[in-house]
Image (cartoon, rainbow, N blue to C red; front, top):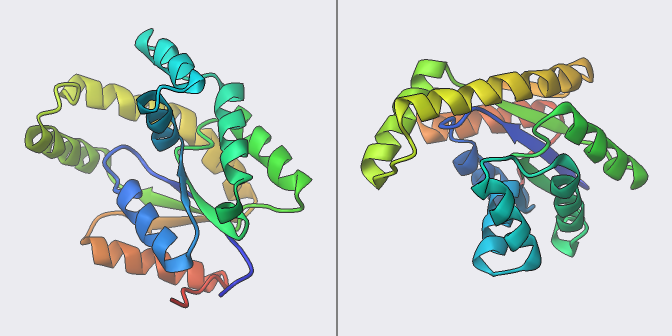
Length: 198
């Protein structure tokens, strides 16, 4: 196994990044660090942070960059993340990229790769509509889905430019069976010397 595997998985809503993130996590023995999961756990646990996040999201606002970065720094300092991690949902904009660079740089570390799950917009909308139908999610209207995809495209494109200049973005075709997509991801990581050994 490599000494460390520090990854970021990026993709539009409905791209399957949550599922693929878990598969990568299990294969490399590193935790998935998802800001959404951390926020939900704190809200459900009734913590002070959860109360802050609830109040912000109830207003329809995004959690501020500094607070989000503080939460992620705290999580990445846990022992289980010492040999790596799979980031999901963070960094979501250029400011957060700077925060992450500062944190990792302070530890003499850097991201090894950014996995971009490339899924056409129509495919994302179709998958999210299906999920809404199956799970009875009222917020997944066509308009709501399109709005979230617009935010993703506006906020995430700049971070991919930054990481693209560093030569660490692997663009993965996100259409196909789960196993096919996982194999594509593992092949791209292996080409970087990050081979699965479990």
